Image (cartoon, rainbow over all chains, first blue to last red; front, side, top):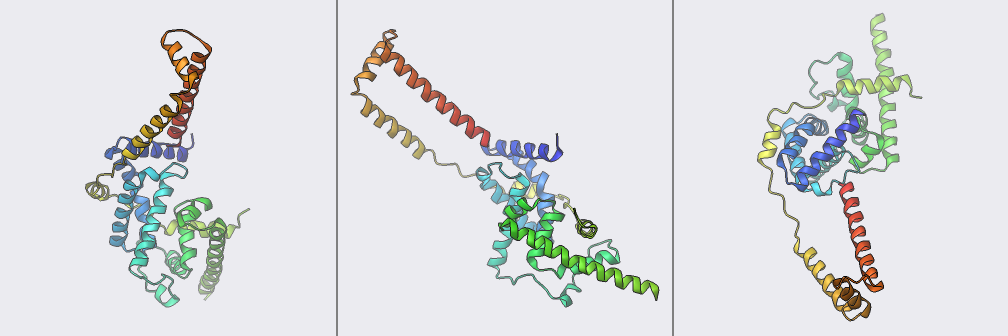
Length: 191
Length: 107
């Protein structure tokens, strides 16, 4: 059996137990199985603000517990959780009237670097910050979190075509950056 | 077919992604704050069932087919009315079973 399908079946069974028998142990299993990726998603969305991301992740799991009867098993449980977490993120951003997180090139250079990165990864991180918020969010969900385009459309509440367009544009910008980067490093090596 | 640059970009995106965060007590903190789930209110459903059953009884109590069928059934006579009543009860039970199974499957 496919591992993903097996995982989804276990999640559905745990969710059913948590809902029908009010089994908190089953829900705890779900939290333990998914907290890592939900927190990673929110840390990326909040640009590495770990404390805020963990607060939002906690809010998302508490909401998932209260709304568990709305999980019908049409999407994977992890996808359903990503959607709740993303909605919590949007609501917080709206509540705090935070500006859109699109930033200019100058600010991108000041962002903290993740640990153990090569020059290229560091530059790539900066190039990533140069993408629009929507492009970055779509690439986060489609590539880094490993969702399909359909699943990303469900999580982000975007039309499928829009998700595909953002993914394509984001990759095109990164490809251009990669070509420039290769050219610059080849010129540097020749000198 | 995917462009080779697409693979490079996707690899870079995956490499720069930190991956799942280590629990570090997070799940315990969530479980400590878990509120009691609000129970779904059952009285409207029960009231609806009672009202439906009452209305059904009122409208059918005067029907001769039903009273004759019921009478025959109670006396152990397998008359046409009793069989009709039995079939109606069987069909209603089967429909309820199918509906319950479909709902259980959705969960």
